[in-house]
Image 1 (tube, rainbow, N blue to C red):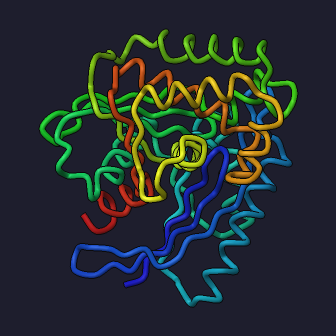
Image 2 (image 1 turned 120 degrees about the vertical axis):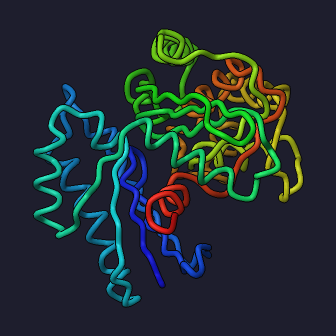
Length: 299
């Protein structure tokens, strides 16, 4: 069976087509649409332009699926539609315009699906922590003996952090301070999650994968490398903090679509790694879509 999943995120919208057989899956096709929906939120509401942007992404995906002849499609949204004041209004318009039924998953569900997906292929890691940095939210998990122990969703992400604190494309010293202050306020100020040493830190999502690509280039790591330690993450932070042409050129060469969100996202990743006292940061190739597929559709 061929199954399509569409994930409406705050920064990017993603389509993944899976071949599902005998309780297992294989990724057949991926498509990304950089909608940047978190950038269309004003006074807590997703603007009309943002709603139309989401419709445009879904229409593009529908054209792809029609061309491939794939009918089985599930659509879910995360913080993009969850953390706004006009969720019902936006859903009504988008569903009416595109014909898709959209499930808005909670922060706790997003954390659980992300963790389940990220650990596919990493089952030997029985104890540690997990993070998924999105455009407008960050999900974290602690796990022991391969089981989820505690999870939380924080209302801070790479795109929202950029929008609130950076005046140009790349942050200056003042922007770094403002971003770090917001990260501490949104994450350290939460009372429903308790950080302690849980290592390694397994990461998923576009931000973490982009940081890994930049790290491989800047630190001269092999292309097969999928992990760094906290010292290497600090070296990357120091490089970003200096700013200037070398930083701009490296990001434009490796991840041009994330020129504005990569550094804010890396600050969140560094903060989470410090909170978990993680000695190793591992980037998984799977995430929330694969977790949703396994937990909800193929069990």
